[in-house]
Image (cartoon, rainbow, N blue to C red; front, side):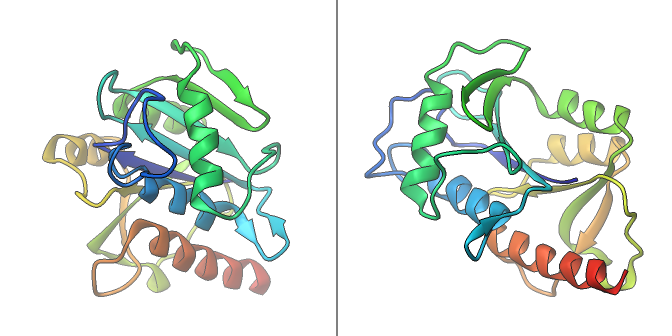
Length: 200
């Protein structure tokens, strides 16, 4: 299984935003919608071995985690409004430390970065943090087991978050010499992993 964890510092944690203004009224929710689409969609199909984890840290209730599961997700179309609508429905649910299903394949719960990283580690996942000064991905041997790729939003990650990621043992990876949008990074990662899987 491939996991993508996107840390979104401004994304609203309530359903009080307009689907017609995802960048403004929702705190750059458009970035998360593009990440969901890049992570899950193929031509005429979905990647069933992918989960997308969106950590929303904006107001009014920071620390809500929305998960999209490629195996079971339904009602998702390849446009920002569609994924935005599913996020909005998830945020309408009362959440706790336990996952609550909002629509098929989409769940929401309360979480913070430290607890999420600990959960991934306890499940034996390999953690990778995408960074320009990380190890060159094409020179790195990646495992065949579950992998988690951690990305920031348009503001990157904070020093505190980076310290938590390093403490969790994440390997810093770079997929190119210049800074890219998070959804573009996901597309490039998929391409690299697809090529490796074909070689196996």
